[in-house]
Image (cartoon, rainbow, N blue to C red; front, side, top):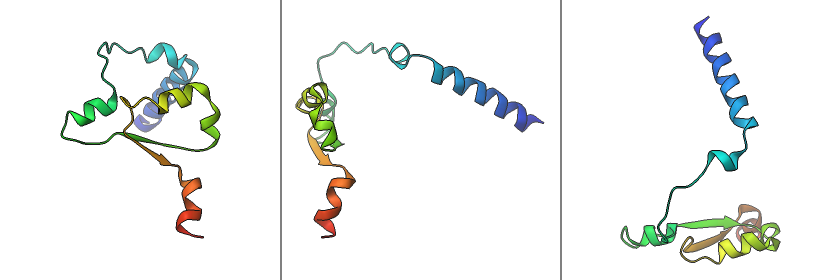
Length: 88
């Protein structure tokens, strides 16, 4: 009976979260100008990167964010793009 009650509460809460506008839920209070890569560098030369595919490269906002060297120090192709390089 306890498991059913927990499942019901979790189900109801996940529906409430899914129905909410995610932009409202994730408001940032970060005011510094450092990006993720800048913070990684300050921790001893670490890299912070992202994986991307060809389809995403046509998006202007996405391109601007990928070009931001304060956020990303490494860009890696997604797995779909790497298969031919490893398994011709």
